[in-house]
Image (cartoon, rainbow, N blue to C red; front, side):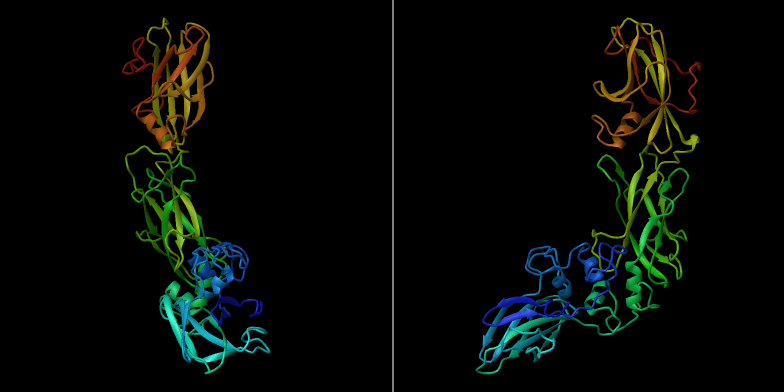
Length: 477
């Protein structure tokens, strides 16, 4: 792209003000850290402003500055008005004061010409020349000015140029170093993620290439088993010290999120910390474990709680997209039969129903509380069976069950009816608000029914035990 194509018209106040960008970038990706092909936009700028996936020639915030120009200027492509422009210009005799919004780490230079036509500054045959003494290296974001003189008795056109500085010549602009917290005067800053063992450029490129994946996706409270997360990179071999953050991980409003009381982040040495290290020469061919998400046991009966684990890149504000993965906090291993919990519903006849029928239903809930195996045993119905359901509230249907004696019917514990989340449905079971209802031809509303209640001891229900008294007729509890 030529400098002419990159020129920015800024204002026309009897003078022409424009920017001719000089651009230094790290450009390995386009749609996210470690994702997509180079796109001509600075990866640090994209990370800082959540500008991943933007097209350089578009104007995301419709403020007259293209995304490419915003990238060159270090401005926010999602904030209208934050682009390189002159706020006002005061002319007094031979003096000109140009006011503009400056960005820390950028250099601003005024150019002049007798005509706005022709090649842009720096191009072959260009009539544009730098105005001596009309340059400034900006040390803080905000409104700034440049004062310069114009030749007496002449009319000039002016352009304002924004370009990157690279004080330590390490290939990372001063603007980017200010954003990520490295030293503009050192090519291998002690504050970079390698601790200064690698250059700022190589360290940043390695950081930007990182992807995060689950090793062990589920943390189990009962077993004390942590979930684990791993890092992999495509650039660099140096050791990298990074920070992890967490956020709600549920994919829908019916699912549950883990909160800070449910887990502790630990490093591989089992020390509680959000700062972890990818050792030198690791995470190159295969992902390498860097952290453990240790579950905090409690006595609550809970469905799996999702947790998003985010790799915090330097300079990126909280809440912005980051390399991330999701793990789950579970009560116990759902595949282990020893973790099952039994709920029993004794089935008695409905009030005012003439019947000698009775029975019981069981719900054997897996250790992770995501599903249950349903069984029903009954006899002496007054007529042919019509339906069997698990219900909640005022006869609201939760799960239709097969007719006849039932064994091993699957129930996925999910939000339904008045129970708007999976956890609410599990709570309804735990609190004795779910019941089994069997209807017949003679009794189409209910013939026998009963509420589930948690059983103590063995998960193998023994209907012959004398201490398990069935309810009296007409009493479903």
